[in-house]
Amino acid sequence: MELPQQVIELDDLTLRRFDGGTDLPELLRVIEESLEHLRPWMAWVAEHSPARTTDLLIRHAEGWARGEEFTYVIVLNGAIVGVCWLLRRDDNPGNGREIGYWLHPAATGRGVATRAARALVTQAFHLNGVDYVEVVHDRANRASGAVPARLGFTEHLRRPAERLAPAETGEDQIWRLTRHQADNMTAEVC
Ligand SMILES: CC(C)(COP(=O)(O)OP(=O)(O)OC[C@H]1O[C@@H](n2cnc3c(N)ncnc32)[C@H](O)[C@@H]1OP(=O)(O)O)[C@@H](O)C(=O)NCCC(=O)NCCS
Image (cartoon, rainbow, N blue to C red; front, side, top):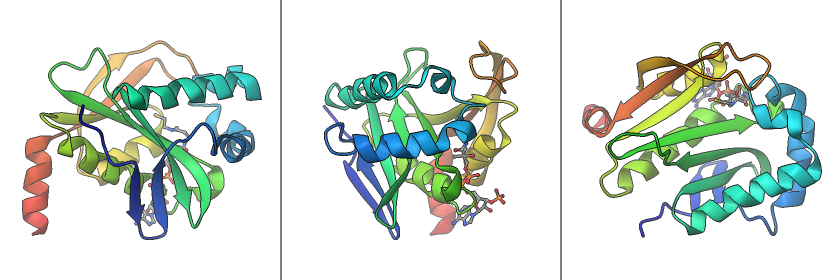
C-alpha cells in the first residue's frame, strides 16, 4: 500500500500525521477556541462535545492505516494551529484525491493553509497513478476557495449539495488540479 509522508517539514510549519494518543488534548483545546470561526462552514461543530469530536478524530486517524484518508495536524512554531487532510472519495471518478483544511482563527492570514495544501498536492501526486486533486467547499466560502486559486487549481464545476453548516448555500464549488497542470507548473518554475 502506498502512503504519503507522515511528517512534512516546511520551514516554520510542520504537517504531522495526527496521533490520537498524544495530539488529542492540544487539538481539542484548539478546536474549542476555534468553534465560532469553524461553525459557519463545518457541520460537525454543531454536534461538538469533547467526547463526540474525539470519536470523530479517532475514526479519521484510523483511516491512515487503511490507506484511505490521511489526517495531519498543522504545527506552527511547535503549536497545533489546525488540521488538513488528503483522502479519496468514493464518488471521485478515475484516480482522484481531495484535500481539506481548517485553521485556528489566530493562524489565518499568513499563508498557512495555502502552504499546507501545496504540500498535500505534492504528496498526492507522489502516490501512484493519482490523476487529479480537488478542493471542495461551499461556493460562499471565499477564504477556502482562495487557497486552491493561489495554487493554480481551476474551477472545475459547481454542484448542488446538502446545506449542513449554517453559512452554506447548498451549492459546492469544486476546484481541480490535474497531474498534467501540476507538471506544467513545475516546468515553468524550473
Ligand atoms: C479556509 C481557511 C483555512 C483559509 O485560511 P486563510 O488564512 O485565509 O488561508 P492561508 O492560511 O492560506 O492564508 C492566506 C492569507 O495569507 C496571506 N499570505 C501571507 N503569506 C502567504 C504565503 N506565503 N502564501 C500564501 N498566502 C500568504 C495571503 O495573502 C492571504 O491573505 P488575505 O486573506 O488577506 O488575502 C480559514 O478561513 C478557515 O479555517 N476557515 C474555516 C474552516 C473552513 O472553512 N475550512 C474549509 C472548509 S471547505
